Each structure stands twice: as C-alpha cells, then as structure tokens.
Length: 229
Image (tube, rainbow, N blue to C red; front, top):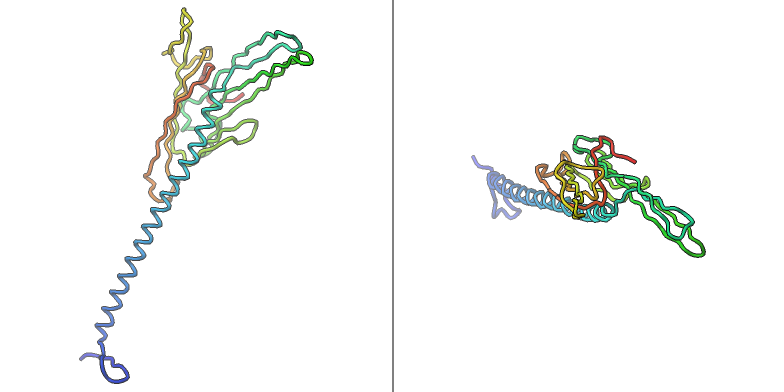
C-alpha cells in the first residue's frame, strides 16, 4: 500500500519514498559541500602556518647573521691616551653539542665588543660589550641580548650546531682546522640546521620545513653544556 500526498487541488502528488530519496540527495549534496569547505579550511591553515614560519625564519636568520659576524673577543683599550693599546681577552663562541636535548636553557653564547675612539677635546676611549645568547625553551629558539629578545623562531622540532675552526698557518694564511672547535682559533664557521614542524594536534603533523645556514664568526669556539658569559 502506498501513501500518496496530494496538493490542495488533488493533483501532482509524491510518495514517501520519493520524499526520502529527495532528502538523501539533498543531505549528500550538503555533506559534499561541508567536506570541500573543511578541506579548503585545512589547506588554508597549513598554508598560513608555513607562511608564518617562513616570514619568522627570514627575520631570525637575518639577525643571526648580523650578530654572529660581529662576534669578537673582549677588547679593553687604554684610556686617556692618543694611541691606545688594546688588550684582547679571549672570549670564544660557546655552543651546546646537542641542543635538541635541551628543553630550557642556553644553547649558544658569544661576545661583541665595540671600541669608540674619542680624541677631542682629549683622548677618552670607551668600549661597549654586548653578550648574545641563543636560548631554547621548549620548541622556541630565542636570540637575546641584554635580557631582551632580539628575534625568535617557533615550532623547532630539532636543531643541530656544527662548528669548524679556522687557524693561520706558518705563512699567515687561513686554513680549516680539522681537530674540532678551538677557542684560540682566529675564526669559526658555524653551521646550523633546524627542522620545523606544526605543534601536536595541528593539521599535517608530518609536515617538515628544513633550514640550513652557515655563518663566519671571527672568534674561536668551544663546546659548553650551559653556554653563558
């Protein structure tokens, strides 16, 4: 027995089966639209995360290059003399051999000294010392100086630091030293590698962004489990 619904005029009716089929078709259509919207939204979130980290990384690596290349030993000039003699105290770059294992603490430290030579009205030479620290806290790496944050990069899954020392040979030419980091070296090549990934529970957790950068610091280097000055 079929149940048939009729319009007011008694013409053009449809069955319950036809009504159910229409509802199912409409529901499927809505479901497809919601699926496409969800996928589009997911894709937007992933793209947004990548854009955020890429922009943040560019700023971070620019600051790292600038301040690492300004690294110096501690310079102490004589004051109140026309031709001061500058005393050099060795301040090598310090770095952690396995920074990924650090959850909260410094993974790199170095000194930057700048001498200001003033000759007028009388000789008065001053020196400004700046200490830079690379701090790791969870999955965030911060470049800091004077207790203030200079730059940062977030969502760091792993980080590696490799340092190659440069020495001068008997003819005063620079050469790469293969014996590991040396605090008395004339310079150091710092190679840093970071892998970024979205936080837990985020979409596309298997997404990775690998970044590799190389810098030259004009000081020696030494391994330290808690780099600081």
